Image 1 (cartoon, rainbow, N blue to C red):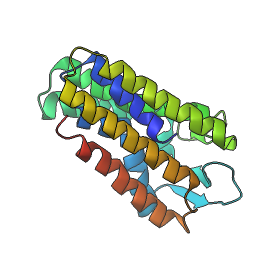
Image 2: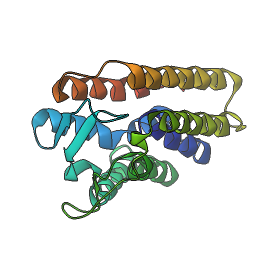
Image 3: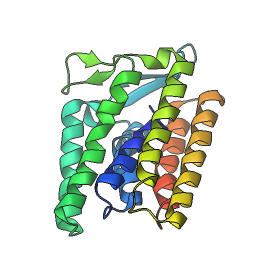
Length: 208
């Protein structure tokens, strides 16, 4: 899953309006932010495989970011940083931690069996990436449904509502470009591009 991850941020914003949307968007993709950094640093491993349908990457080794245990640890860290480092209210910290934790559960339906429960051992994934068009439709539908839930909230004014819809449409375009664009030549440019994207999206929402 790619832009569908941001659905957790929109739902968390609906549940806790005090939470900055940019922070929730970053939290929802934090596991992938760290993954991109770890791939570039050689701490985790993946390889481009154009023969794979959908997402053309074999995610060989990523226990420090995408195992269930690691995701829980990153979520706890997100909560602690929001609560104690930045002094955010308890509800905001919980929303940020929940957005981080959502990442593994959003990945589960689409990933091939490459999601560890712990550092080693069985790996899970229902494999919707193997069916690119249904996966793409599901991902975009989920994103737009969560946006709709947020913009119908009374806590969102007309100006913010318009900005959120514009951001959502930009995410749909980004998903389409990712799905139908050229296969990257290797993991380093893919990870670097992904990292820039994951940081750009919350930056675009910094005034929401």
